[in-house]
Every structure is written in structure tokens, then in C-alpha cells.
Length: 271
Image 1 (tube, rainbow, N blue to C red):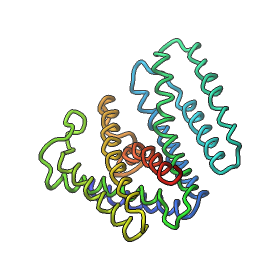
Image 2: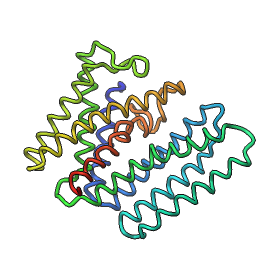
Image 3: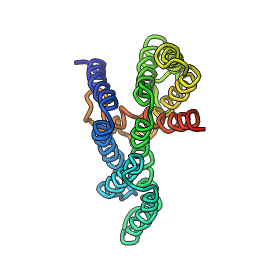
Image 4: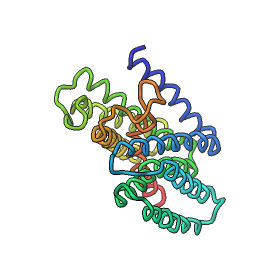
């Protein structure tokens, strides 16, 4: 199969898995998204091994990420008290002390990348679960968010492929064009407005702003992931997803879009 065929087939089954888990409830979503999060952390810290001066334990990074992830979800589900979040601070400072016994590597860079993995990978997947737990309408906001992200990715790809001429960021991603970027944003806004008009009626303003934030977040998330890989001279973050590469390759747009959508959702419904 061609790379495009692999991308379409993998994307279809991945989409069914993501949307299915969201609609089936917190337990199923928790299992699926936790798996994505763990694979994503593994890929991130594996990429860090390509930096010669960095010495990070993947196991330690995954342990911290999983601990914080479970802690936050426990508080969202009201299984754990909010005061439990205070455990994060002593955990970080205790593990940072390990740098005292390391003889190689740059301690500040090690600590920074360790924290970066948790912020970049763990937090967005947690926000997805927390957002779905807060959802009180028949339409899952998280599910629509992913649909808008995929709309932006797909339409940017096809618009750029057939009409793209002017490069967007040739230094970082030579294949991305201004035409593809604009096409992705326009189609995402159209789908967002249609959802607000006919599916989630009375929420046109919410989904209009959401589609703009999501499309811009998807663009910058894609570019950021490309910047990471180009700086490390690797093509993909992994190989678990045929046609896409790794989890970070597939979720690059989502990881950047989720925090902005989450913030907008909280401001709109709770302020």
C-alpha cells in the first residue's frame, strides 16, 4: 500500500477507537487515552536519548508522568481530594536530587526535558478526560474537538497537495504551504459553524471561536513537532502507527490544541 493508503486506514481505525472510547464513557476513555499517553511519553524520552549531553531515565519520566496523570484524574473523578495535588511538588524535588549522583550530562537540561515530557504529553491527555467528565450535553465537546483537528489536518494536506505553491516554514517543514494552511483553517471553521448551527444548536459562537483556536493550535503543534524531529535529525517519533509514525506524530496537532480549547471551554461555560 502507498503511504497515503496506510495513513487513511490507520487514521480511520484510530478515529473509531478515540471517538468510541469517548462516547462509551470515562472508563473506556481512560484506558485508551492512558495507553496513548504512556506510548507518547516513551517516544518523547526515547527522542531525548538522541541528544548527546542528555541523560534521562525513560522509566523515571514515565513513572512521574503516570503518577501525576492518575493523581489528576482521581481528583477530576472526585475519588481523591483536591489537596492531593500537593504531592506533586515534593515528588519533583525528590527526583531532581538524583542529578547529584550523575557523573555525566547536563543537569539543568535533564530536569528541563524531564518536565517538558510531562507538560507536553501527560497534561493534554488528562485535560481530554477532565473535559469529557465535565460535559453535560448530549454532544461530546472532546469528540467534536478531535473531529475539527482531523478536519484541519486532512484539508490542509489535500489543499496543499493540489494548490500549494508558497512555502509556510521551509526551514522546519518543507512540504507545508500557505495555501494548505489557509485551506485547513477555512474548512475547519465551516465545519465548526455547521456543528454550532445544526448539531449543537445555540452554540455557533462557541464553535466558531473553538474552530479558530483548534485550527491555529493544530498548525503550530504540527510545526513544533517537526521542529523537534528536525533538530534531532529523525523522520518520525516512532513506528507504532503505519503511515503516521508514532503517537507523537499522530497527536502533534492535538497536544497543542487541547490546552487552548480547554481554556476556552472553561471560560465560556464557567465564567
